[in-house]
Length: 327
Image 1 (spheres, one colour):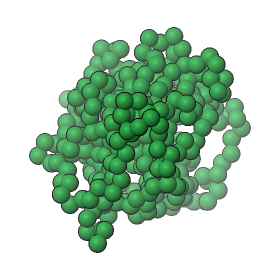
Image 2 (cartoon, helix red, strand yellow):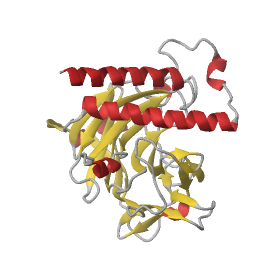
Image 3 (cartoon, helix red, strand yellow):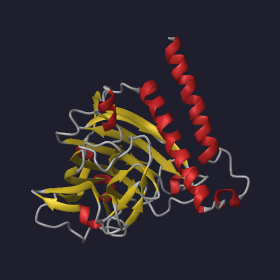
Image 4 (cartoon, one colour):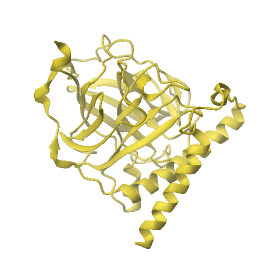
């Protein structure tokens, strides 16, 4: 009991520190300029590293306090109320650029997003993560993201991805929804980042700990001082690094409900539920700052690591709309 209480107190302390550092208070901001503080490049680099470590500490406390969470077998997604409106099974030889785009290329956290790292193979999308001496942006860690930004967006419905997660320290994959409205000072109703799943916990296996878990999270208010965040669930998955599993979210005016293999793992309406169309993203990222690996919630990547290259393998992405909304 005392050990649990200590863990909870440590989590609360870390959460308060993060809130003071990177989030606005729950009350209205005292000044619109508060979220526009500009730092020098060196100061920003130090601050970003501090945040990276703090996120790691908080996440460790979350795993202690909230783990183990298991899908609720008695609560399953009801697809009978939906109509399939978007589907990509990644058949053929190339990514369908009529619906996907490589919107952001270049530095991303501890590595680079580069479109050469995403391709179609054997009916799957593959996002390959590896270290390259001769990469497009110089020596470093390369991976990618694709998204439906400005090509397909949807408000409300059920969104699902079937995939195998990349098995390597210092990186994580994600299936998420986002909106161009997610800016400093905007409430969650005007756009919320919905992380259906993120997979930063592979490194725990090297520590002799269980690592077959993913996180589901919500963010709004931009990504500076006004940023607000909530972890909705940390959930067990069946062999996520070697077998296909499905990850989904049901989104309606009443909230967000997260699922793994059709079974509920958590729900929330944090920040006020987004009311605007959002686009879908598939991505892998290396932990770090300004293109250089740095220790974070997924560990730290190393050029000579025997777990690289690693692949995020996606069988399909589907979006369903409530049938009543289509009438």
